[in-house]
Amino acid sequence: MTLHDSVRIPDEVAARKVGDETILLNLNTGIYFGLDAVGSRFVELLETSGEIAAAYRVMLQEFDVTPEVLETDLLRLTEEMCSKRLLVVETN
Image (cartoon, rainbow, N blue to C red; front, side, top):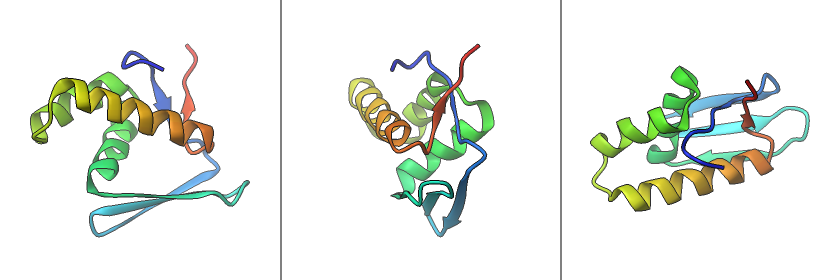
């Protein structure tokens, strides 16, 4: 997984924002995942473009974090969500 990958929330995943947090539920597997405000912003940005790099660039401006830490954290979160089938990698 790299910043150049694109991902999307599959149709079988329901997302609900509650305050600053987001809950994702895979309706087929029953797996759910809670995201804090930062993770919620990431998912919100992914819903717009699907591009991890685009979300990264916006979040780098919005949050007080080094580029290296943000990249590591976003890729780790993306990989975890993909492993739980809450995100899928787009193939073009």
